[in-house]
Image (cartoon, rainbow, N blue to C red):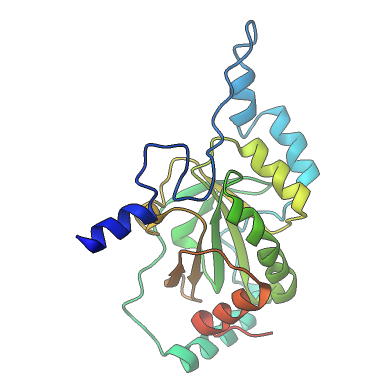
Length: 233
């Protein structure tokens, strides 16, 4: 019973305005009279408003299936060798789920099941205060690790991609971002406990570790990259 009670507390028990205790959910604003399409304009990824916000945010292009070839091959092999030295080869690691997510910025949709690492996937939403606080640490990781590591943001369970893009622009986030408004990753990544969450993906595209807590510093995030992926720079 104690374990069940703890789980309910962790997930925020549902039904309220708070999601896992991370902050109020931003919902759609009712359209003004005579402007029935105004709500759709804020959420459609192909709307002119989204196009303008994408231009302002200047996110890196979403990774295509060609990632890992050519110039990044050597870096990936080095990361694989380092990971095996740190944690050993683990055949029990689960592959990434076979889901395709739309790109929030520019570039193709991303098929997670075809993605190769090493990679760090950060699940966040603009309505989540801890997500906003830790986001600059992932930007620093993106800048510092370079081609050795893919940093990919996932705007999760968020009805307002326009606000997500505006926040990315305000915070100076440049790493690529995809959208999971339909919560396709709820079960695969154990998102029942809420946001934020960070998924460490090894060079073979398998899940090495999932962290369900915010990162308080760049050093804390960098240490976990070393621990779970064996990647250093």
